[in-house]
Image 1 (spheres, rainbow, N blue to C red):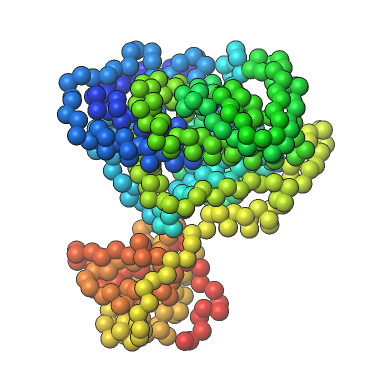
Image 2: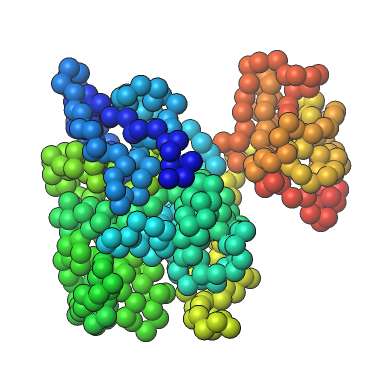
Length: 489
């Protein structure tokens, strides 16, 4: 047994008051929807409101020892983690304080991993599917990008390989954080985006969850005949489906999502996986699912504990769901298909998909770039800002040398009274912030317009500033001063 394994603490028992058991009917679905685009907030909100008036606290629901924690052959890392700061004893309790709105303003990216764990396997395994879900809390949008498992990429520290090898190598070589951590780093390096969270689910969990929501309905566009579809034990379990509308149970949905027996193989499969998740989302959000999921709350919870691994806390999952309830637009889906890759055979005979990096970069920018959020239109704003004559300090929160100085030179011709520049405490800020110490609304709005700062990145403080100034601008990496922007207005 490795040192890492021997030092792992026992998973705490999870003690839940009765109100939490009811909420788990919605909460488990929200955690399920980490795999289904984290969009079960309508159901969660309905359940939360239904139980808000309940006043039952003395009838706890306790998962017996051995349930809801790590089990043999499971993915480990229960969703109520033993690493939680609040788990100092043998029990972990949920509190109504969990249900707070998401307070962040930066884009949230979640890597979803389908794990190819077959019967009898206990060692490292591969990912069968990879998808990045991105949620923009400012622009109020959600999108999903599927990556084919044969994408030929650089795995940090391990050389070039198929992207589905990242999880395997992270597990096999005991990479810090395991396979999921290396998969996250690989996706970050491939797409050039930060990935804050991951969620990995194995086949058993997928099948059980689809069955618990009583199956899904999909529209099949072409006949699929796969006589060599693999079963879970290195044999065959043939799969055939005809064009048209079909109701699929958990195993059928898994086969439909995993088969590669169509013309474009892995590319088509990625699109079907998104179709399955869309169908599951639609089913979960239907009103008649509420009583069924309430009744099955403990079973859903145990399934997620045993078959799902994530670095997202219970609080974060719930708060993201509450955020998503405010997003009215449909989920935008994208696949890295043959527009962005081409087939190649490696010297050792592997058939892989080589990325066209320029095209993938353009797709990345389309999906993950924040939308432009205009500041309020105010007539004669430049003159109003000059009349305020607010003292402005600029701090550089990036690693770009001289950015504060060049930004000052850019702003001075616009009448901005920059009195000092300097470096921020943190040189890795991703978004520019404006702090108004007082009431200098015209100056902050004009700065936001000139620097492209969204309104949510403007803070109005009642505290005294750290120096002799009125407004502080902290530059992030989203601000890049072009030569053309230095011209006098």
